[in-house]
Amino acid sequence: MLDWQLLTQVIPKWLEVSRKEASFGKVATYIPGLAAAPQHTLGISVIGITGEEIHAGDCGFMFTLQSISKVFSLLLALIDAGENRVFEKVGMEPTGDDFNSILKLELVDPGKPFNPFINAGAIMMASLIGGNTPEEKSNRLLRFTRRLAGDESLTWNESVYESERKTAHRNRSLAYFLKDNGVLLDDVEDTLEVYFRQCAIEVNAKQLARMGMILVNDGKHPTTGEQLIPRRYIQITKTFMVTCGMYNGSGEFAIQVGLPAKSGVSGGILALIPGQAGLSVIGPSLETKGNSIAGLHLLKTLSHNLQLSMF
Image 1 (cartoon, rainbow, N blue to C red):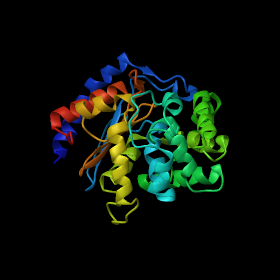
Image 2 (image 1 turned 60 degrees about the vertical axis):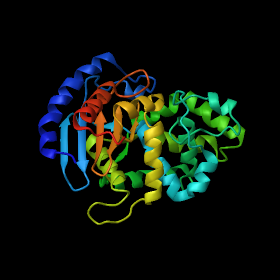
Image 3 (image 1 turned 180 degrees about the horizontal axis):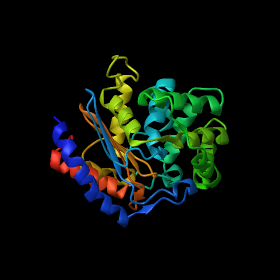
Image 4 (image 1 turned 60 degrees about the horizontal axis):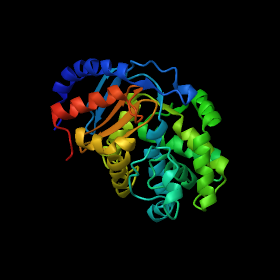
């Protein structure tokens, strides 16, 4: 079990050591709205299922979910469309390719995405969220994240949304390819509107750690006991976090850290300490695979010193 008193003492020290690693990475620039993030920002929040909290560094820094949103769009798609429908549209396997690769959509029959955490798969999940319009779907996902975070102030970063919408040529290619394959049945631009909106939901590490804590608690609200998400869907999502959550660095992360996790190119990482706590890190400087370089270093330090690996 976590020693919260020890964590309070060591996390700030370990964070400052890991912050130095940011010099060896680069902030994402291919989405213009992300390019201004300070390279050496690093923050962490840990929230336990029994109410303990630890926050250190730049944990109040606001960042957009980007690919971390795929965790929550998958959960909502499962709630709205059901397990059978979801897996008619996406597979259950890691790809080993970049998160925005189109390669296997063309090479593998029937041309559906390998999993819901690559961009093509997340576009499919956006299409399965309930609602008659892009606005209704987007608002349902926003309300879902607000409920998990326990914070009605969560909203979109309009600047990041606009910059992503204007420059997302690869994602448009993926969506039109899915449409041509007969996998995506909805309007392409309507579906992409939902996808761009979900990526632009803005949080800080504290809010994201609380969302993670709900997942660790098998979808139950820790105070009321209300089942916010069916346990089966939590199980599915946590499995994808282990196998596909850190892009094509997921295998290495499983060995080095050993926790279910999902990263985003804004520098966020959501990680789950099974049975104990939700954890989030923000560090905008990325390594070559798109994961926070200082965040990875900090999570490796925590895992190795505290023996957190689930394996």
